[in-house]
Amino acid sequence: MNRSTVDTAAGILSGIKLNRIQNKTVKTTLLNDYIRLRKFAKETADSVKDVSDKFYEDWGKEKTEVEKLVRERKAVTGYDEYLKAEKDAEAIINDILSEEVDVQIIGVSFDDFITAVSDEELSLEQVAFLQEIGIVQ
Image (cartoon, rainbow, N blue to C red):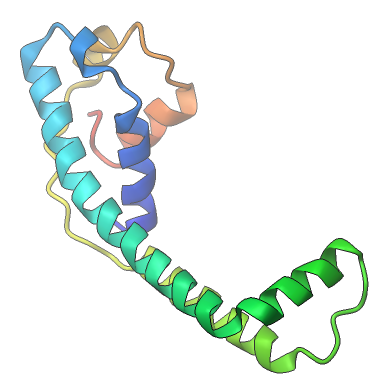
């Protein structure tokens, strides 16, 4: 799965209160899946931060000026090099997020998952997403 998907899944699982899950197998499986996902999500966040920090270090002054022009709804002229560099940085970040990684997901059955997390505030979309990537089977 790609790093963006991993990040989303880790975010969903991070919101589940494991202490409330009574089924030890479900609890252990979700925790192990989360730990595996989080490892890649953290690597992704660190890489994106490195690109963003370097871009800001190199172009911080221009970034501030361009953002001010945009807020004021003025034409952004004379910043061609900055705009190209911004586009390049965004492309690098998109490449990072779309990179495929091999995450070993164990997953839990749909019925066990629903029973275990019945008190959680998960949306239908979140449950469907977890099912699409194999955490809920």
